[in-house]
Length: 107
Image 1 (cartoon, rainbow, N blue to C red):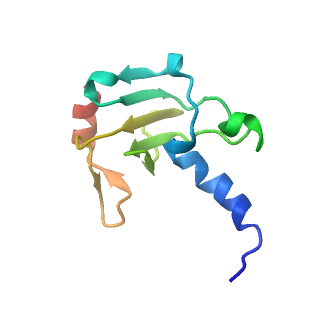
Image 2: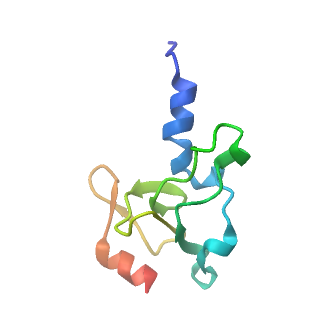
């Protein structure tokens, strides 16, 4: 099966939602290393792949669990990344998190 433009769509839709592709400005992050590497920071990070694929390809604002985008963040233009077992993905479609658990993880 061939689908025209699937590579470009993958790069534009998926790559900004996978932490593994990011090269973050660590000075802009509120690091929580004592909590397993969790962090919160501004979504205005350097372009992915040093801008080779265009400077508009940047990390997407949202909440990430184990490096994968789960849903939009309640705080505009932020990225919130959580690793380990403190924050679990919920919902039938695995696209949400428990708000009370999120508050505990941030606090």
